[in-house]
Length: 284
Ligand SMILES: [Zn+2]
Image (cartoon, rainbow, N blue to C red; front, side):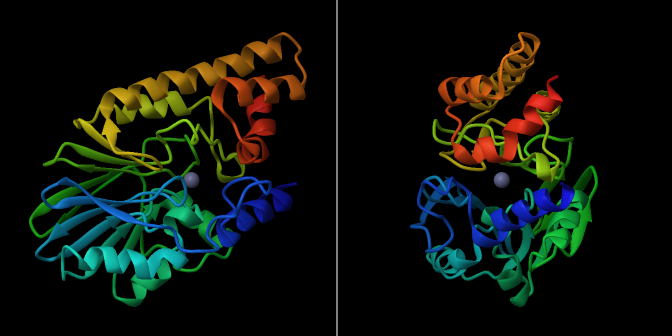
């Protein structure tokens, strides 16, 4: 069973499968990217839906990127950066192991960037044979100084996976959240049980994140938004877990629980594939 789950996770990361096979596959073609300024020296490289957002801090000692989409998006990321800076990519942080957030690691390491990720994210990348393994792993907190600017990396606990890092830009009051917070109706909570995700732990992990000092959030997917929206998402995540606990208690079937999650939380096939059985078992 463990091997089967790992192989599925490998397929997600390697093939770029992020949505159901009933939909178009992602990662087969470059996404259409859009560079958006968040504050003077802080940008997001946005695209619709998948892959994930890239957050960019520009300094006169190089760039720090949070996440880097799929490998196939590398050239377009570099082209977007070139419209606002000639600085090299110096640091990359992976918010977690999924290929739509860490697929550019090898290309960025080839131009001398150092990649940071959670211990567990790197373990997962080794397990699934992902190229571009992180150079530095973090447990709970690391502060990087680049060009005189501070960047804080935190790992608080399980949520989307068991190796989720959030990145705080303390001087900006901006948080890059990774997939611990996704924003928009088409990107509901994805609980990757094969990657150590946990619906039970997720709200508490977000409570810890919400102790940090920020107003603006770059979600893993979706438009840049506010702390308040992240707080709402925390409550929705708790509601999702409670609903499944309640339905388990009522002896409802797997099909009934799946139907409720699709109707109430807009779950798609991938959410069911990665999350449903683990969620039912966890909320028993
Ligand atoms: Zn993810």
